[in-house]
Image (cartoon, rainbow, N blue to C red; front, side, top):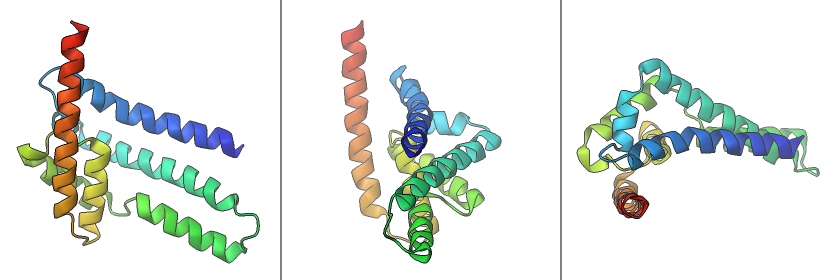
Length: 152
């Protein structure tokens, strides 16, 4: 059962993140473009999907600890879940909207923008992570452009 849940969660995450990647590969579209074209309901659904995936994975990871006490398992689950799931969706969405409002962040993948926004909402410093994410996004853009040229 736990392998099925992990496989389902991994498949879900791949499907969620592959959609924006395909949109970005289509030419001038970016991750920011994909995010900004989502309705508010779709953005909330995206966050709900991430929380569901985090819950499934964290449940499996904590229940695999056979020697752990129930209280320790509960603590480990909460720590795992809270690390990946935002508890204030409106603030996370607003932070993602603000992040993507800067055109320099357009190629930061949506999962990276989510993580950065979640950290911002929690009050963590993210300036260095944003710089790293921009570099990653630009590298990804070059790879997609190269692949697009090869495919033609």
